[in-house]
Image 1 (cartoon, rainbow, N blue to C red):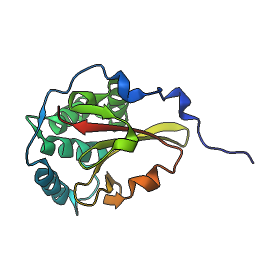
Image 2 (image 1 turned 30 degrees about the vertical axis):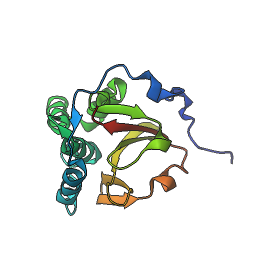
Image 3 (image 1 turned 135 degrees about the horizontal axis):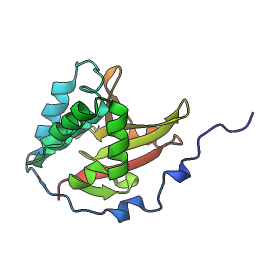
Image 4 (image 1 turned 180 degrees about the vertical axis):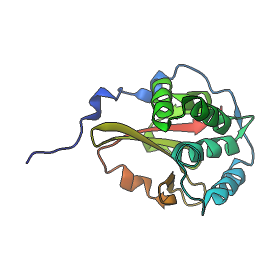
Length: 171
């Protein structure tokens, strides 16, 4: 049997990070590392609840923790209430590059503490996305999924055939 990996080239743009259409609106807080660590600790031990406690809500809360005046988590919750469907909100955000208003696009190989990571993949024939954050102390990728908050090496993820995007919160 041949290689069954999905070809993501239809989703990828060469130098995607150079094509940002808007400028981030918020400053990064001077104590962003402490605020991010506190937010991560608040999510540790929580259970997944579709639409309310998942990877997108976690990443949004982490972005808000780093910014002065950010409101990503509120925006995500409003979109979820309006749409009533996580999949529809994710599709809208993937089309509109939601995190562009919160930070600058960066090449995935430059991702470091506090950066938002988007992972795109195909499961059962459907395009999916997961969002995570680079943990500020150990520089591991944190994702909130069905099992709760998990921490893994970004380097391990980069060995997969998935598509990655990264943002650095703040301007």
